Image (cartoon, rainbow, N blue to C red; front, side):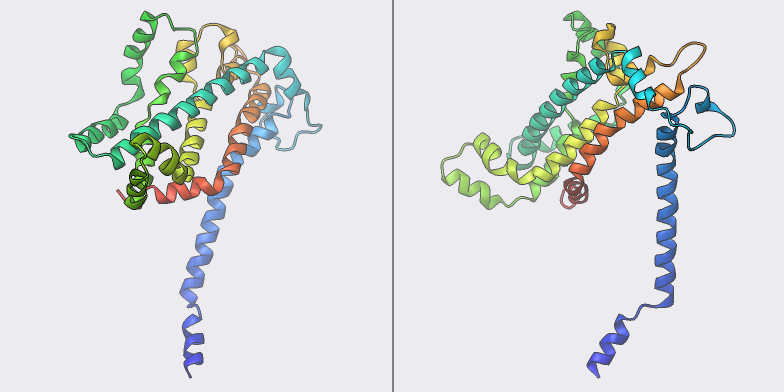
Length: 286
């Protein structure tokens, strides 16, 4: 009798099945809407210049023109642009992870006067648009003769209110007994942070790293303002070279965009598990 009741309870109602089907249909539609631009980008990157804007559009180019991916390297120093971008991304990700984790640990685990107020105002900087601080930051770097270098793109990115908030949520969730045990063993606060607590927040660190990589890799405004020498340009500026005053080589723009998307896609796929875990866990405890 009990087994029969359990089987009855486990049977799904018709309404639940309908809702589940509708949910999957909705997700498929949203997925198609999001994938279509990427498919069009790949398709256009394999077309002739004027076929990329042909009406009605042709989705499958015949024959595919793979020479576009060679042409973007011959017409512009795209390899140098990629090296510049990788260098900037490397230092930005490394610096932001270190300084954000250090500040997050201080706000989460170290008690000092005015901690809550300071954290409140620091997080409040998230509401300040980047355009507001653009001119003062430019003037500051101009006075120290750092314009047309990569330093204005690297140094300010070391400090991220979002990164501090994200990592602080993880540090708060860790048990205090671990810090107490480390203190008994003679560890100072920095040693406790570096050797005990930091390895435990790897999911959040990878999540922040992916976010930082995406934002820095796709940054267009910063390089456009601070860089004037073509040999120091990033990929976003390099791709813009194919857009002229009277005509735009859309096939080459799309080929460059495909190459620009690949590193971000690889980074996300490699850290997907930790990325989702970090996002889901960041709001568990405040």
